Image 1: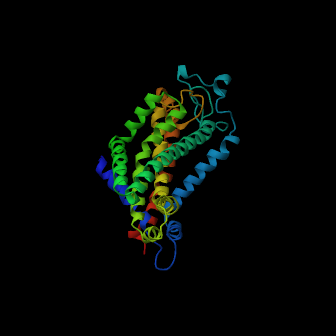
Image 2: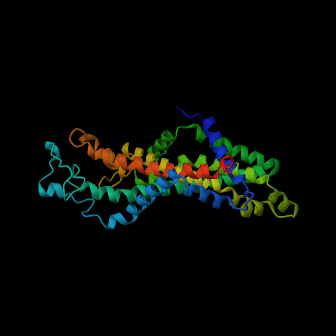
Image 3: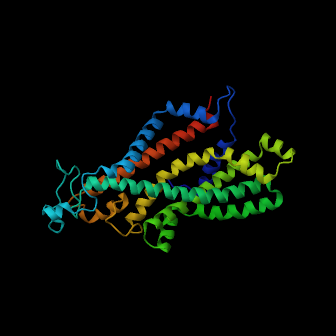
Length: 323
């Protein structure tokens, strides 16, 4: 089902309302109650376990791999002859077999996890930083800036709406095509896609917080509006942004893999990365389809982990579901 720009904006604005939630009647803070609910949510537990394993493999795994990720062992030993359709499968020494260049697939999958994590985290941080800057300025201008502030907010949001109107993958491909194929390009392109989401989300949260009693009290005491925005409104508006960052990591990994699959990622295929491995496996689907299945399954499971945890966090912070 296609999500229209209007529905996308409504979903983002709905999440932004979470920032206006107060502590409950029992005096338990929003984050304490959310964490308590997360511990009782099976989906959150499954997502957290998947992510913990993924991060552990990405950080520690490359130091423990049995073979070099770029070492063409199979060709050197004469057991891999891709031109003749000979690419051996799993064995006792090579758990996932060889690829078309005689490299150990298991070692490349482990090392590729680090590259995938790096792309996902950096691209999300890029989108978060730029989006938070735009959304923070727009939210402060709309909530505390008066008439001139509303004009600034309107101009920034029309730019954000134009970005939201474009399909995310099309926008990422366009940016990557303009910058040229490289790993840095993938990070920037995927980061640009998430900028409007973070911008609109933080802006909506700040507008909700600008109507709070503590803002009125600070204003009546003569506190500068810029100080109110930076020291009070922004920190209290970050809850839905943090949730969205978790969900964005899932889409960032998928979109980065898609760009690599289309040939817009790192042109050096010797550096393991799941999207590149998936693209390299296409000519050999008839010989060894597992070469494409391994990275595809890894991408799906990792994205699922981020999605499960992100959705569970969103539900835990939703005021309508809190008792």
